[in-house]
Image 1 (cartoon, rainbow, N blue to C red):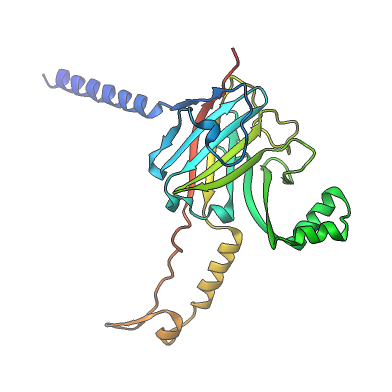
Image 2 (image 1 turned 180 degrees about the horizontal axis):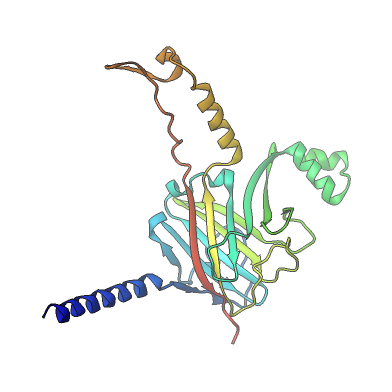
Amino acid sequence: MKRPLFAKVLLLFILILTLSFAGFSKKKLITSSWTNIPINIDGSSDDWEYSALNSEKNVSVDYGLKNDSENLFILFVFKDPKYLSTIKATGMTLWFNLEGKKNKIYGIKFIKQQVPAEEFISILEQEKGSLSEEEKNNVRANPYYFLHNIKVINKKSKSSTEVSDSARLKPAVFRSMKSENMHIYEFAVPLNRATEQAPGVGAEPGKTIKICFEWGGMTEAMKTARMKRLSDTGGGPQDPRRSGGSWSKGSSYSKRVPRVSPGVTKYSIWVDIQLAKNQ
């Protein structure tokens, strides 16, 4: 009598386990929409007005994807500014994996950088040649300028490449803009990846890929500054008023452990994308 009962219990357990694994193995596949009209990358959602957007409720983000035969277009909208984290300092990195794995081997970092007028003049002269004094004075009319730069990250390669807006090679481009309480990021990434250091998805229309949206966290400069603060507050017992500590009963001195600064969370969102194919 016990053996049939045990067999039934075991069979039920295996069935529940199988259903559980089946549930966990399901992947949410997002389909890109085909577009015959190239998206104007200006940091506005105007070109996406009638597009169905996908949501990541945990970080209050909506995103949409379109592609044609040459580019993948992405709209990424932050609806709650607290989830921006340190994106101004870190930028946003898009990781592309063609094997459907969560491996961060090839990615493109998009970052908006503010530079003073004199540095902007130097950049212009490197790209276009010498400027006249009149042209330089026209540039100096504004104290600073914004550059929308990208950096190709390929961990299988020994170097990385930064490409500016005006590069001769067709780069990936982006723009960002604040609209009311929303922060909008808009991207265009070439589908073709000519070389290992070229910016590109590396997949043809109709293919399925995995993309990771990554932003926030601490930059190397932030980490260095934090280590310095930890070092400055280290050592033996001191006057707690000078070292950030406090007196407590039962001991002569209790040093406060510095906490990680708020608002530096690093976010990573992996999505399975099927690129649209023109019918």
